[in-house]
Amino acid sequence: MKVQPKKHLGQHFLKNEGIAQDIAQSLLRKTPYTKVLEIGAGMGVLTKYLLEDSRFETWVVEIDSESISYLQANYLSLSARLLEQDFLWMDLSKFSETPFAIIGNFPYNISSQILFKALENRDKVCEVVGMFQKEVAMRIASPPGSKEYGILSVLLQAYYNIEYLFTVGENEFIPPPKVKSGVIRLIRNNTISLPCDEVKFKLVVKTGFNQRRKTLRNALQSLVNDKLILSNEIYSKRAEQLSVTDFIWITNQLFPAVE
Image 1 (cartoon, rainbow, N blue to C red):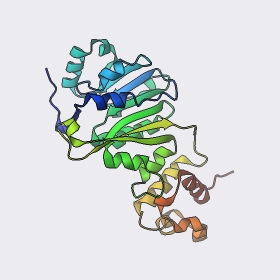
Image 2 (cartoon, helix red, strand yellow):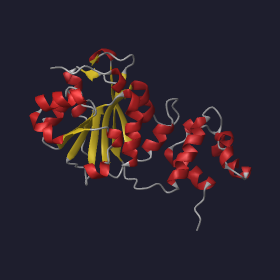
Image 3 (cartoon, rainbow, N blue to C red):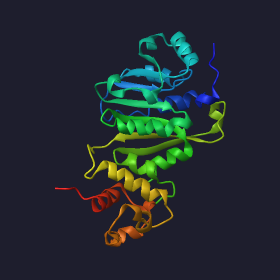
Image 4 (cartoon, rainbow, N blue to C red):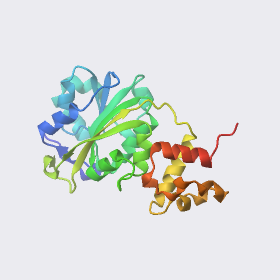
């Protein structure tokens, strides 16, 4: 029995065992968690290497019923930890009371949503190792000043240390995607909460990047009543030139805390 990749689920099954092993071994366990949740296991090429690692307990969430049947038949030890549901609708607070890691060859069409869900649950999700479309992976891991640096970069880098690990070619998958893939690792940093209003922080970041060719003085005008606030030299820069710390400073300038 084999599982047929389904286009509507964005499935591209990794066939290179060496790459699967490299991905599994990329989990660093900086925070000593006991659970790993794999998203979208397909035919279990990555699952196999996760199950061999006795440092943690592997769980799988899979939306494809055909994959579920395959995994149940071929990975008997996994059956009690196989969840047939949509990860994006999972209540992660009920999944685990303690921190855990997320790993997977993520479907390109929901990869950003997976990371936003991890971000929302950052008190629990202490590490992520994932395969993304290469351009998305580079964007997430890019530092300030690079053309790839964007909204997702800033929001994730506020809470995670991010590293681009390696690139995977199109022909390592069945069926081959039309683009290269990139594997990245996110490790939770020590930031519990930002020293600013986090909702306003997101607003400032998104507004700045929505007109990324403009200077912040022009891009952020809609958020400001008094234009004198924008007189600082930092507003002559573009959003892609600013670090997380810079965006925190700007948020506090535009939306000072009320005593």
